[in-house]
Image (cartoon, one colour):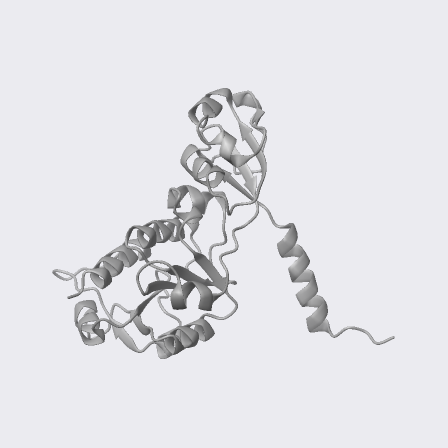
Length: 260
């Protein structure tokens, strides 16, 4: 009997781990939006009496009988410092579908955001929120070295995690090439770029745009930078200019959707 190749064993192990993965969402807004999301698989709902009263409109849609606990006995596996507001919901991660399905013909403007090794869940949550506001089709990040779906991310996203596709792909450069094949122009945000974002967007015209942002500090990796079609900077006044990656994403998304 032949043994399975190592790569097959590892793939099967990863698939089993993914199937077993669950996420604890917390906070009134994040829990309410998840309860109201029919695409979200819900497993366990833990609430204080006060939180149950505040979520009374959403609990029936969730299809779960809540576990009502005393505030001092709110024993769920989340960071004790988390501001949970007496509400926590165990769920399965969302499955949005393939890159092609979401980006080639999905809902929203022909606009996506790619995050190169942005690992802070608060930054990613804020980017998801901006992406939803400006109608982007997806936020895309690599499986490794990116923020996974967590309660902290969901709370920062203020409900956007339930509605805004967040795709984590095996290889960011490959995803960029796929987007190029769909007709997207890849614009990398780089502080030292000669071209401004406005100039880059004007040159692109009405074609679909993929905005590529790197982590604060290291910025875009060399491979990511080389895969972009254009590099552009957000102009700033005086001798200082530095934006948090989530703020840079919001500015760039606004510029993309309001281009002439």
